[in-house]
Every structure is written in C-alpha cells, then in structure tokens.
Length: 195
Image (cartoon, rainbow, N blue to C red; front, side, top):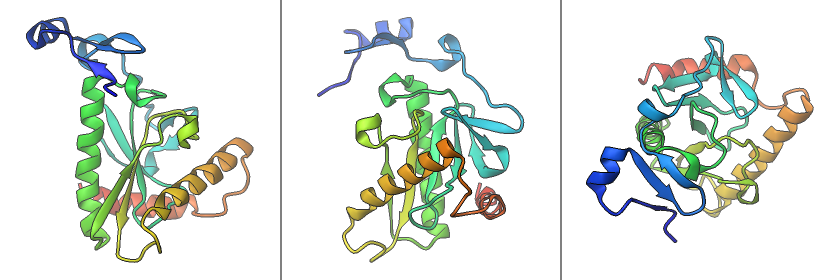
C-alpha cells in the first residue's frame, strides 16, 4: 500500500514544496524552508523524551545523528535518528527521510568494515505494535557475521528484547546492567575516527 502520493504534477509539487500523505494530509517536502528543526543543546541530543549525552553521539548532520547503543544486540549495533523529534516514519519530511537513510548507509558501510562483518541489518520499529519503545523514529544498524545468531531472523527478537530492557531502564531508572558511560564514550570515540 502506497503511503505517500505526490501531487499530480511533479513540477507543480516541486514548486509548491508539498506532498500528500493518505492519512495525515498535506506535508512539507523541504525541512529547510517550512519545518522548524529542534536542534540539540551543546550537551545533549533528544531521543524522544530521553537525553543522549553528546559523548555518545559519533556522527551528525544538519538533520540526523548517530549514537552508540546502551544495550547492543551485536558489536557495532548503533542507532540513527532525526534531530527533530518525530514519532512515526510517515511524519518525516522528504529531506529528513533522505538524510536519515543516507546517514544510515554511510555509517553501515564504515561499521561493516570496522567490525569485519559480512552483512548489515537495518531495521525500524515504527509504532508501539511494531516494538517501538522510544517514540522517536530511529534506524537500528547491526553489523552481521556468519553464525552471529543460530537463525538469522532471531536478530529481530534480540532487538525487541533489548528495546524492552532499555525502556525499563529509562522509565524506572534502574542501575545500568550492561555498558557503562565510559564504555559507550570509548566506542563513540572509536567510531568518530571513521568519519
């Protein structure tokens, strides 16, 4: 099912700077002229209602940023999300969508080489019934190796489990069981060198 329908004339749509979504009405194409982008402060980036310390962010553009994962399913499991707090994928502008995927592509390529992986899994959980626990669009990037999971599709169960653990940690503010801020900073520093 097609979620977005361009206005009948592409040139007209381009001049107007809008596209139509079936459920959400008229939406702007360009973030630079019609959407205010909520930029992060100097110390934190916002991930839904949660603050991600700038030390955990290893790559950013005007519209997206990438950060290390508190509870990775595999080595190199990172997240990329738009700077603007957007709950659902269909609510991204065209510029945000393009930047998000181009950023994910660039990061995935570098991390696959860095971790000596042979493949990549890119996944989005779009909405609560899809397993999204933080209401902010984000792409999971996972460098994959032979036999990292008995069955390749088990990666999705692992992502779901890590998301649930993360939500419990963030909501209940339990003591961190997985990686320390120092470990995450060290990983982010290593990844920054790749870009």
